[in-house]
Every structure is written in structure tokens, then in C-alpha cells.
Length: 433
Image (tube, rainbow, N blue to C red):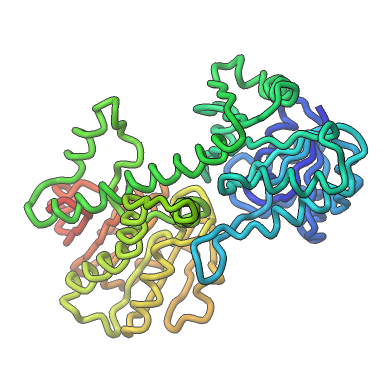
């Protein structure tokens, strides 16, 4: 099939590349000329394991193309995926749909034959209705179909999630477009992917509901970890005991920093905003948002306690600063709160992250990126394991920090407290008493 992916961000690029790898002809479109030029030369703008190889492979096989010509790309394609950003509006909780509706206006003027228009971006309920209304200004209803087909790609696991999805959700209000979409996804369905056909509005809500529930699980276990610390219980035991219940499941029940990234923060806000418009109080999700916002403050208080409230001129080493491992995404990472706050209190901060230097810390005083773990830990007073990269899971801290009492705050619970104590390391973790 001939596909057009509008937007070469995380969703558009990964989905487009994977669709091309399934044998489709794919054009990925973006208005950023430099990004398109880089992609044409195999330079990938995001960190996602395995993506660069797939891009080069499908460019060479002439199934994958990149363009900045939106009108031409639309006319050449049968199925159009809208994959542009829907960030939170400034000063509020609503999703900013300006890019979505901007694309819809461009589409309305470029439909030359029957097109299936798909929102792959995460959008509030009834956004599809709004897109359809815009398209009807210049086109008859039999010239297009508007479908919701939300993505469920985890950063760092996106290619695997596309090829072996938990489910494929297609929200369509007509049988013709639903049949075409099922054929598009047939290679994945035959491998065992569960295919769900719903109404368009239901598909839009499934995405928000899923992310809000996962965010709730993270916040729930973090709050329990606070309790465990006060009554000398290991949160890991609680997570295992709960997770073995098939009704609950073990995923997202790991205590640690606040949730972050491109989805959970904005999607929890957006679903509560939608509910408010319909006079429905999603009090549980609102509590999740509030608790998550306070999480970094609680972790900072723990840092102060570890340092006996003597932060000034202390060297603090951060291992990892992204919101999770296997991604370069800094959006809503706890480090964006913790590092500036510690800097203001006079700490000298070094950080190492496998994805390199972060511009977010450029203007913050006494914050330096170093290119190796050993340099990051040199003469440090406190090591903070912030992100669960594999690089940090089996470090010999005594080798890195010689002849000094070592303090390690493991915010991801990567290490055994017993083993760390045997190595004479002052070790602190999350929710382990």
C-alpha cells in the first residue's frame, strides 16, 4: 500500500519505517528541511535502538522516502497518517491541536481521490469529528474516511512494540476503511497481534485511558514506597507480591522517580481536561498528577538527608539524566527538577548519560557533562543513579572511588542493599526501609 506519514517525530518516523519494512511504499513528510535532508542521508534525529539500520535498509530497497512536499506526498498516497505533536497548551492542561488541525486544512485542499485519513497522534475524544468537519468544507463525504489508530510504542522498545504489539486498535465509523486497515495490519495480525475495531471516539479514548492507568500504577507504587521506608519494609517484595496477581500484573510496579517522557505527563492532563468539559471529575487521575508533581521534591529531601543537609560545595554525580533508559528523551525527567535545585543550593554536579550532552543544563551553574562513568564518579561525595541504563547495573564503585567513604543513592533499586553494605558502601535506595 502507498502510505504517507505526516510528521517525522517519534511516532511518525518509527511507524513509517516499520510499515516500509512490511513491504509498503512509505513517504515520511516534514516541514523541517534539515531533518528531511538528514533522514535522506540516513542520519536519525532520535535515539531508538535499531532504527538507523531499518532506515538505511528500506531506503536502499526503495520502499522508504522522505519529503518536504506535503501536497505532492498526499496525492501520491492512499492512506495518510497524521503524526504531528499534541503538546500541552501553555498555562493549561488542554492538548494543543493546532498542528493537527493545520494538517487537516492542508489535506482538505489536496484530496484528489479516495483517501483514508488516520490520526496516529494522541488526541482528545472528538478530534476526529473536528478533522472531518474541516475536510468536508472542500470535499464530499465519499472522498475520504477519518480513522483513529492510536500508537502504543514505548521509547527504547518501539520497533519491537510495532512488530509484536499487544493490540492494534482501529476506530472507524465505516466498514470500507476498517477493512482496508485490517489488510494493512494483516502481517502483524497473522503473527498473533490482537485486532480491535471500535468507534472512532472509543479509539481516541483508549489511548488516553491506557496511559492514565499506567501513570496511576507508577504513582501508586511510589506512594507505597514512601510508606515502606517508614516501617522498614522492602518495596520490591510488595511489587512482586502484587504483580503475581494476574488481575494487576507486574509491569509499571517499580518504585523510583516521577514518571516523565512524551506521553504520561501530557496525556494525564489532557484526559482530565476533557472530563472537565463534560462535567466529569476524574479525581483519581488528578491525584496522580499532583502526587507525581511532588515526587521529585520528596527525592530531593532524601538527598538532603543523605548529605546531612550540607549540600553546598558537595560534588554530586548523576548517572543518567533521561526520564528512562534506551531513549534520549528529557521531557519531564526528574533530573530537570533535581539538578537545577541542587545547583542553586551550591552543589557541584557532574552527569554522564549514554546519549550524551544535554542542552537543558547548559545555562545552569556548576553542572558539567562528562564523557565517561569514571570521570563522573571521580572524587564525588554522592552518586545518584537516576536512570536504569544497563551501563549502571554492575558497577564496582570501590574501583571508581578509591580511599573514600562512598555514598550511593540508587533511585532505581538496581543493587542489593546487603551486597553494597558488605562492600562498605553507604547505600540508599527507594522504599526499602
